[in-house]
Length: 133
Image (cartoon, rainbow, N blue to C red; front, side):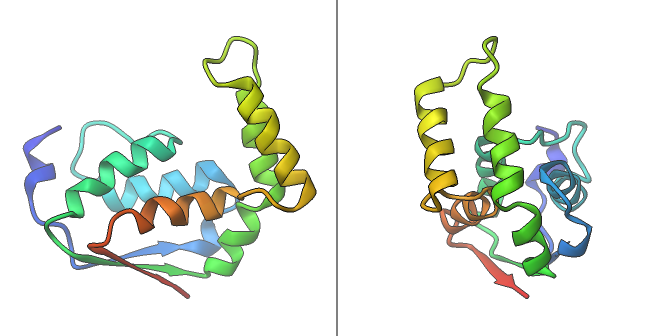
């Protein structure tokens, strides 16, 4: 990481949820907010997001997610299905049995959507106050 990542973050950040139409759009927003001073970008990875959010562990921040209902719909069942199906690629390194189980749960209405997974990642960082608007 560059030395810029050691600077204190802004005390309030905003996601434009109306601009989120899929996973790629979410990460475009997150890169604008969280990676502006970096020489690299955060890829579409929940583990990567979790790692980047550690920079806020000592500097509390409020993240305001405007139009979160739009994002919730955009990152809902259909987008989550596409994301999981892409992980079933035979050249991938994912646990295919687990991915199939996640897909079955999603189809039955008991699975977790990508939006909900992102919220879980943020919840693991208590210094980040997430406001869904």
